[in-house]
Amino acid sequence: MDETAATLHARRLVESLEADPPEPLQGACAKGALRSLLRSLRVMGVFYEHDHYDTIPNSPEALTEVEYLSEENLKHFVESEKESFGSSGKPRQKNSDFGSGFGVNGKRSPFEDYKPNVKNSPSTVNKPKSSSTNSDKSGGIFFVKSQKPASIEEKYSNSKNSISERTSENLTSLQNRNRASDEMDGNSLSPSSSSMSSTGQPPTSSISPSNPGNYLDRCGVIQNPLASPVLQALGYCSKRCSDTNLAEQYSKLMSSRKQPRTGWRRFLSDRTYAFLVCLVLWGNFLRMLRFPFVDHGISIPMLVIPSSWFLSTVINSTWLFICCTRPQNFLLFFQRWHVLYKDPVTRGLGLRGLIPVKHSRYILAVLWGMFGLNSVSCFVISVMDNSFSDSMNQGFYVTGSRSVVGIFITNVVLTFCTFAWLGPPALIVAFCRLITKLFAEFEEVFKLHVTAAGNKFPKHLRLLRECHLAMCDTVELLDRYISVASGLIFAVAICTACFLLYVLVNNSMDYTAMGIVVFWLVSSILLVAIIVHYQGSVNTAMHSVGSSLLTIQTSNANQDQLAQLQMFLAKINGSTMGFTAFGLITVTKDLILALLSLYITYAIILLQFQ
Image 1 (cartoon, helix red, strand yellow):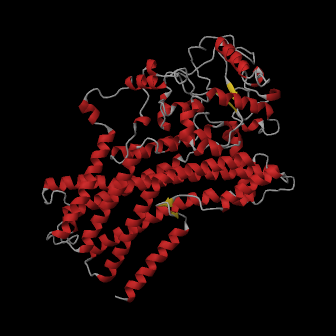
Image 2 (tube, helix red, strand yellow):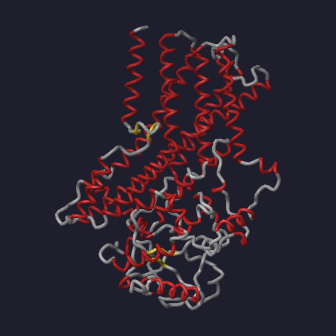
Image 3 (spheres, rainbow, N blue to C red):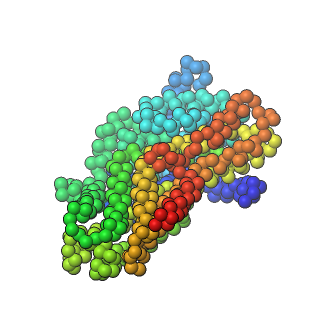
């Protein structure tokens, strides 16, 4: 697809989104896109959801009501704001900050945020609407905050510190944004870039105060001392969130949940289930260590195949269990993506955070298909006699006997092994596909900005650069969690493939045993190739905007704009971005060719010295 076609595609994309904008609180909900896959992983005990992912209770008393400013609250807020601005001599004008949602000179600023207009709110039901642009005497108004985007480098690189400081800085940051918005004149986007309806009012949220937890649960956030400042930034400001004694409110919220009452019911939780599955997989692997010291009658190749497989399952399950145990891992990743795409600057640039739900379903279908195939293969090997698999079935038996009960227990354990072997790589692939889709959307929108500028310098290159930097920082955050897991998966699979190549060249075996060796050899190679392909696609997508950067016209650019362009080019052409293995090697698609060359060279050497 050439540049013109890509630009037209991006233009149609943005126009379609402006014609039918998504809900403002439903952009880039990464956990919502992976919900089906995560549910499947939970069923098999590979993944469990931390307390931060728990569902908010349905009890209205335990829910946080969305703040709907009354006229008295509005007057109090305006007076306090005027007093705070008295020293600067620039009291804020009402018409530019709240009312109908329009900023300076009657035009809506793309950096204005708003709280969701909740339908059927107790403050608004059965009350007529008011046409006043400043206040609604019937009981409430829209509250719109004009905000100039802070540096996204500072906003997202140290989110843990910013979360802890956000509560005390709410009013100060709001004042700074409004003071800065008065100084903004030529640095705002066109009104068409914001998610406004044709009537000039902010779009209506579908989240009702009776159950706001559904969406929060899908995105992996609840209102606790860690997440409440983030919820305030997302527009979930509430009376309870603004309380100073947040820990006390959090304890009341947790006590109102439908939690197990007894010790035994507390013990029977998702975490316990995942921990028991992890223990079973570890025990299944450790029992293989006794075979080198006993007379088992199993050939070395047929002993290495199940041992390497059980080692892979232990690595995958342990890594994912640790990631789920630490709340700052996946929770922080989901929050960062959501905060980025909820930001009005991001939405004003034309980015909406498209979610590849269809591709996630394909991944889930392939996962269950491979799960069924491998489970059937393990069942056939376990029920056949020793000659069928060259005694490899002796390494499968958990109880050590070939009785009916032993075969049943063995197949139950092998079922968990199969999903632990396939599930975490499928989750890595789903994450990579999600990130690739978001960077592809950024590239198309960036081309649209460059093309719309014509022979001039793009007006919002700085904002686009900071948005790209925030996306790259989020990928680096996720890489901290999966870098070690990817490296261990690569190491075990590559070593197993090399050993099986040696076995095929130097050992003679019957057709069934050879088929088992070939199947495991192909599986080891394909597992690495698939993960490398998708992680390499992330690397390509992160650098794809570089070609559009080279087409920017700089004839009318000033020194600051040229500096922004140079920093953007330095980021793109600098160190390679993307996922890594052990934090040492950046995974690119070239790695597939390198591994293929390794296997071919190794096979030729084996054949030469046979």
